[in-house]
Length: 299
Ligand SMILES: [Mg+2]
Image 1 (cartoon, protein in one colour):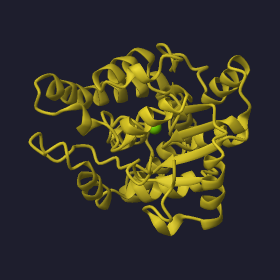
Image 2 (cartoon, rainbow, N blue to C red):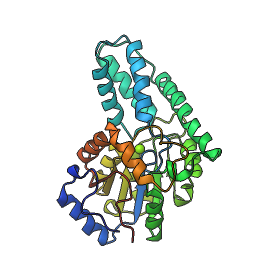
Image 3 (cartoon, protein in one colour):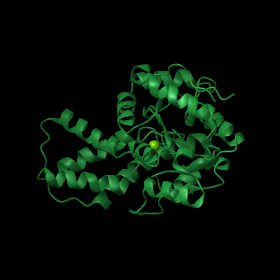
């Protein structure tokens, strides 16, 4: 596996880190890879931050907080959503409810906020499920470009692959099936069951190291969230940050599936969350930022 001298967005690449990573990868020391799901492998939930921000705005107003500076409020809420990316939504709502209280808003029920968000997101995701089942879209259109090839290449090299997602377990499993990605994870899919508030990616990583006889430096993590990035770095692993687009709809059902790179480029150019993710992932300690997997050579 080799990395390109630069990959977009190039302005955020500290060259010395990239070089360290390339040398490390050439030594082939990795034994296991941990993948986040949404925004890292799957695009079925692309647009979830916008859906969550919209729901939070409504609850913000319902709590009696000022609505005179809507753009500033939206930015604050987007910051909250992206800085907690990787946590289960219910935990994100607890953070939101606490923020509302600190600002003098009335008391909100995190479970209700989470249920409203899940309902709205389900509507969006359901339309995508339906388009897949009707054959209007194909799985490659909902997979981060190059992800399947990356998984296959790592598997061929003998790495054990694990999936850890803050999305509810049954949904992650069903979506991994729908995209044909589940066979890559015979060793384990980790996700919260129901309203399990105790789920934390840090604990999953500790569990993996303990139960699979791994050292932290033998772990390579791929994620678009700050939570998984920090946790992989905490144990001494290598963290690849995926600054993927959250533009919610792919172009059209008739878009040829052979043009994922173009599609991503188009989507990313309209999407402020790409640069936002990029900066957050670097601040969280990511060793390398990718906008997809196409820049990696897997020979
Ligand atoms: Mg994610």
